[in-house]
Image 1 (tube, chains in turn green, orange):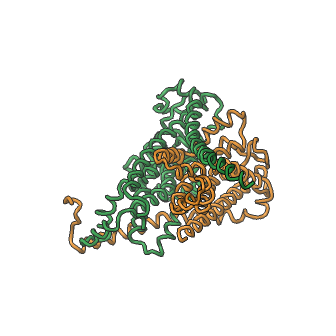
Image 2 (cartoon, chains in turn orange, yellow):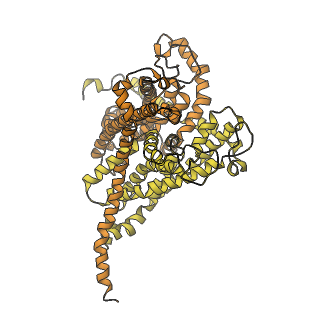
Image 3 (cartoon, chains in turn orange, cyan):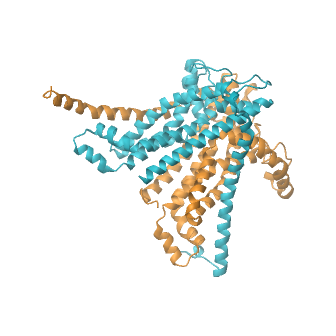
Length: 319
Length: 286
């Protein structure tokens, strides 16, 4: 027995590594396969729409699919504008939180606040939507929107009438809340990765805290912060359920942010399982394909920006 | 340093600007935290009355009726999650192992890139794609399709955390195992895995927390089912789907149940996040 065992074991060993690594590589390849399968599924699903409607699909502004008129511009517009509102609000707030956490907050406060902000990312999007529909929309309708219409009504985006409270502004606000944790945590990490010497040099030259942030830290962390912002944008563009409940589901392009609208993701969510004709279903698939391509590009840009940050700040520099 | 970036004004003005920025930053924290507490508080107030025994023990009531619970949705969510775990966790762990242990930086880098791409795909798009792949070929909606969609959403989180956690295992441990004559697969399975286990568990918990509240990918995969079913080849219910339908309904009991379901989800997600955080912190201290 004892004479046989070593040879047996040795043969086993030689095979072990290639088998194990092959196995791991196979599952690594599964991820690639999943991404490719998503792309193929979307393309083949939207083939009929691509063939029949072509690229003008995204420029046509008439959405009456049951009568065969399918222009997805209102959805594209709604997605872009609601995400833009979300980002305009979320970026300054996130940077403010990140700067506070890195620069000003006392140590005992950093973790609780960081945790609360992360919790915001953990809440399921459907709950944001429910809260937006039942609490935020009525609040905006009764207080904020009339005030904005009265005082800033000369701007087309704030022109009345105030309707149900659901619409682009409400969707944008909800999106801002959902994007804040993403931008905050990446901006915070980027700022933490700035070498202490940079900050100390600024402070030693007599800069105030804010000046050291503006002159030493923000420029150094710039590409990380942009990466975080773009990653947040990717999230906002694709967000579905929260928006579906507060956008107002009306395919129209209006300048006023109080008006109901529609987005690419929410039109898919609302109409796909009820799409009766093949072309209708295929058109919704094409919207999904568009969403996939846009978020893909946005995420690639974000990752490239963030990668350059990682190169500059090797692991272990966080304090 | 160019002129425009040089601080301007008297010391007093600069101090005042410093204070102003501090106040603005604190305001930013308030702007984010107050809605969070508002949402949590509202969910608790509206959802707590619904969370009794009936909620867990009974299926959903017919439209307009009183009583009933969300058992069909809870069971459906459980089954869908198990399918997602079966599909997503091994894939994530082995792919993460591949990225961390293979010693081919270029390959690991491309794997991470593809993984990041998958992480960025909107969940509704995953739902559409799974509809095209699974539902269309089966001919009908099924819990299996929903589980696969959620599994796809889990993969990136599990892969990334596995990769990161295995990178944290000191090389000295690996070298020790190899020096004792262990082949690399033994080194990985009996040294690296156990050392990284806690971190990997954290990743799995965060992945579950991420997908348990997902509605969009289930809309055209599991589809929902008003009856209790254990058959994963049939349409299956899920809590977020049921909440979505009930909250927009005109019936009182349905709305109450929707908020009960929302509170239940929030509590699970909170517990998962807190436990994951505690585990992660312990790891850092070790």
